[in-house]
Length: 183
Image (tube, rainbow, N blue to C red; front, side, top):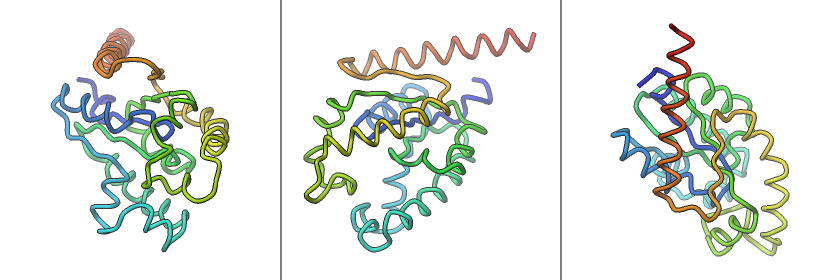
């Protein structure tokens, strides 16, 4: 496997399947899997909503940047990042410098379906219109996800095993084109 693929990073909106698909891909590749949000919770002993409440979004984002910077130095891992992680230039730099970045794109309808009842999504809590928030976040973040992505995969109405198969196939095609350029 080429150096470029020793770190595989999933980016995309909440509810796109970054953690679920990331775990399956890591198992297929015999890589270790990390979810940046779960890593933050493990290190702090607190859940994400609590960190948002106590430290605010800025405090959470600082923790997130530190975790992404550290994890992006590891090899043979698959990393699922939080939906807002790519809004910070330092996070974009960390993942694009060494990683093969996969944007899991999904419709706002699908995001809403998968997330609207999830109490661990601080940006969707309270008396807010979750669909409107997801729509606004998608509009803001989609161009950024696309700008860092080596591969864009649409996940709506696709079976998980087919998504993983498409990713592995695209990565091997990408590796072949890199090898051809070197020769």
